[in-house]
Image (tube, rainbow, N blue to C red; front, top):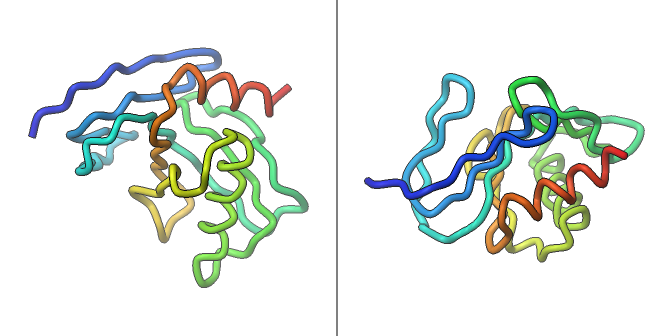
Length: 128
């Protein structure tokens, strides 16, 4: 499988990757991406059962830390994450997919039909 992508380190070490097809490595884990649609990937760490939905910070490894009010049970936090990111990024929910980490706090999320620069700007707007 061949990957054609552009990796960009921007801002406070935010790692955003343009996805075409292939695999992405986040930390020590390698994730395989299949559908070949163009978009951006975000490494996200979720904290469920927070007092409000918010983007908290960008960690030193580029992971975007997000707090969600939803509990982690029965996929509610994943649904809340998709809903929250759709609102923040102004994209339809169908353009956001959790491609890895469905059962954990660390997730790899793809955003279809949105380039890395646009995603980066929207995330930064939420931090300020």
